[in-house]
Length: 79
Image (cartoon, one colour):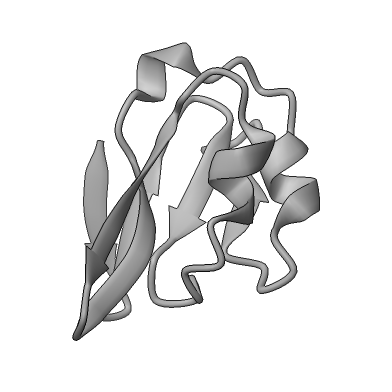
């Protein structure tokens, strides 16, 4: 599920929110996720992680803890 907010593309699962505007394409989230939730946009002019398999996300938060650019955050219970 993807939405536009504040001119940044955001994608979310039941547990996490990915702000691709903050993503620096380090791919650490892909390495951290054992469930293959993430994919990549890896074009010379446009690079960021993306959520390919939102239904496979278990909410383990390994990607949240790995992202040093704060591009991935936990979804609050109110969302």
